[in-house]
Image 1 (tube, helix red, strand yellow):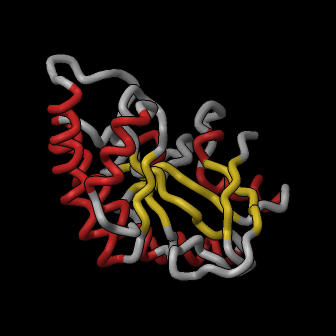
Image 2: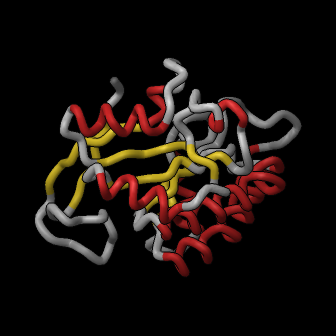
Amino acid sequence: MGLGFRLCYNENATCHPQKKERLMIELGMHTDNWRVLSGSFKQAAECAVKYGLQHLEFAAIHGQYFIQAMGYEPGISLQSNPRALKRYCDGKGLKISQIDGSYPFMGPDGSAYGVQYVQQSIRFAAELDCPMVDTVDGGAEIPGYTRDEVFRITCDNYRQALPWAEDYGVILNVEPHGPYTNDIEFMLKLFKHFDSEY
């Protein structure tokens, strides 16, 4: 079972930048670990409860995916009822610590598909009292684009998502997965480009 950890500020913390009390580490897991088992979100949640974990992350599905509807996929459709999901998680003593809104956000496909995907993930996260949505770049460099062109497009994409994050009080994370997020100069330039705690 893959576990993650996050630095939090107290036992009731949401890792929100305005709640700065004593630090502690809390364990959680991503329901994606059940994808290889053809497991559902509920199977992953039950396992989290069994092992005493309190935090879950799940992948957002923008639209419907028939495999998820049949119970063989641990992601959650952004078209599902977030309040019903919150009641289910609350009943099990689980908090959603992050939504994986990780359609590759950098480059032209990020503009066409990723922006709306992340915006809807932010809205869904707010309904769940989930403090964070993560974003990624993808697994390979974008063919036919220079790094400067990708950077400009990436800034445009985050410029469209950040107002949603700020309005809903949800932090946008950038996970290091591909060639741009693992390029420290690219990432420093990106973080310096925006003046937002979100």
